Image (tube, rainbow, N blue to C red; front, side):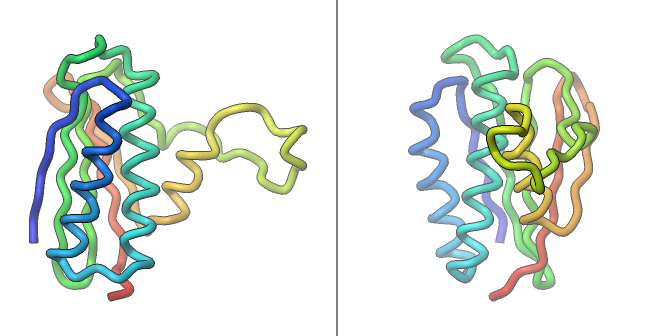
Amino acid sequence: MTSSADFVSDRAELEKLEGFTADFALKAGLSDKDLFALQIVVEELVTNVIDYGGVPAGEHAVRVDLSTDNGELLIRIADRGKEYNPLLREDPDVTLPAEERPIGGLGVHFCKKLTDAQSYERRDGCNVLTLRKKLNS
């Protein structure tokens, strides 16, 4: 099962993104737990591109490719934003009380925790983030 969708740099696209991931999960037969992880990861990463990627409002910003194969979910997010590898960001110290933690980084931390493997490359002027997750379904 494979599905792809493109999104422009506009937070209104997040509703379309939610429908896209839900439709994919239904067709792929994902469990509720896998759907939850998928939606958290994809929404966080696409939101970061829209908010911080530097793509002008209304322009094509990101492509999301989803697929399943051999009990694994593959998430590939390719964006036209400024070069940025979120995997290089140091994980926040989640043992600190919330008021003592610096702002930022928690969303990417959750994305890493909700997936089993992550990789980044800069290809053809795009950031390409690939995440893999063993399916519970």
